[in-house]
Length: 343
Image (cartoon, rainbow, N blue to C red; front, side, top):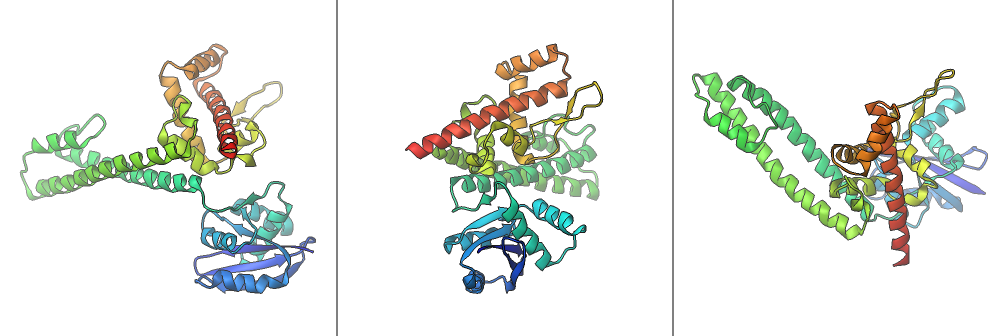
């Protein structure tokens, strides 16, 4: 008898529920999050011989317990929270939130899924994902500091800095400010501190980009051969796609990254609109490549101009270009995966 064990992970506890092929609950177990959590889970599950584990958000909150189970020789599947929520809603008519019900929904979702995501050992793609996430967080923090500095400089000099802010521009403007009161002197002090923070982040971001470039080179990917995709975008795509073999076609890949348009036809009028679904991080990386191609003389610009000539709007042409880039990215990822298996 095949058994699926669903795990609803939390910071302090993990709840596991075992169900059989008929979705009948066979057992329930709650364990505290500790060094012994996997040992206790495996000891409880010893009575289920043909078992698989399904962990909700195995790349998020359930990352540690999922990878500990893999290290223990168990077969572990990743279940998205949205999929588990749908099982609760359609199964009972209401999305009651409690740990045993959540764990049961995770198990059923994994059991009925056509293409369950298998959790494997950590690989180079996960390294790239970690590096890119760190780089993106620092870039967002720098942007926040720049916004605050822009506002502060506008209070010290008429117009502030009208262009992109840099450490050198900000320092030149502050050097021309004449403090005429305690409040102004305090504003200058805070502005100097913000400039120092931005300068430190610039140094850290430069080192981060160098580290990501080295990691992308080590992956031997061909994504950087696509015009508009640099090391950061390549690392983002590889890190968030993971195993490209989980996609059978380029259409499935486009649906995953949100570049497959949604049909919004009505009557005789056939039209498509923006797809807000899919992995938005992947979608952003492809969007960056599309913008670079659109702004420069490239194949992407020629494709964009052709779509405009066909009567498409600017946004529709950009969406079509993003889909073209998505298809090309998929071909490169598949080729890289095949090359890796033959070496």
